[in-house]
Image (cartoon, rainbow, N blue to C red; front, side, top):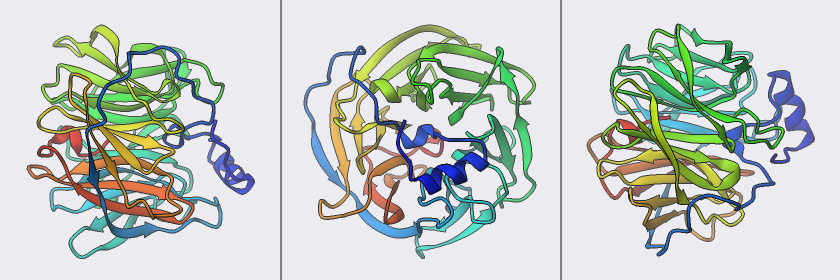
Length: 340
């Protein structure tokens, strides 16, 4: 697992989590998976928009995740390691470059955020407590959508994705703390009453996104640095599964995934403030980079592309704080590139 400062471990332990899949590990290996993709493609330069958070004294860190646009064009992000009383969900006006907290609580460690197409509420995965909670769009009215075991084991929910009907698909990083391949993909019906394991035996399941046509799910496996593809039938069940892309990240590891209107994958990298961009055939198209002289930013966790536009906003964090960077995506933003 990634080594946190002792102070951070103590704070995270109070909310029931010592490891966060969005934060990566130190012990990944490149064994297995699909062959390395060829051709690094071009470099896309990302520009700084603003600093969103500072390192918290209580936890010794900050980690931005889950960027998603609301219906008014504001960008919402979560701060995974925010302590009780500090903003855990933050709304950003990207034009004015201002931000404000809209939700906090005393227990959650939220690693992703996305609006449901079914009820319009904002859904958050709580890695610390194995839950999925929802909020009204303004951050009020917190509700527990799902809690408890799935097939006899509690979840460590990391990222989320919705199908067209509002059913929820969760990347469950079960087994990460022990370094074992017990990761799962879990489906939860849109009423939160029924759950099922769609895939298991995954290596620290992290990013999850539907492909452009909702025919399958892209899944990143953090401790194997690979992206797997799960093909689905019309009822949300997996019909096949294979290792699709080997991500040559070096010391970096695969974090969250987004998909644009052309079906391109934006693979965030933990351990490097960058994103690798692939087409659906596994060809490396580009690498999104922040300026080379930037110090103190270690990871790009996720990206949201403006719905119907190509302006992309990437969450980046490190010892100097949590920042928002922007770049021009290769294609327009859709639901699969807006949260999760």
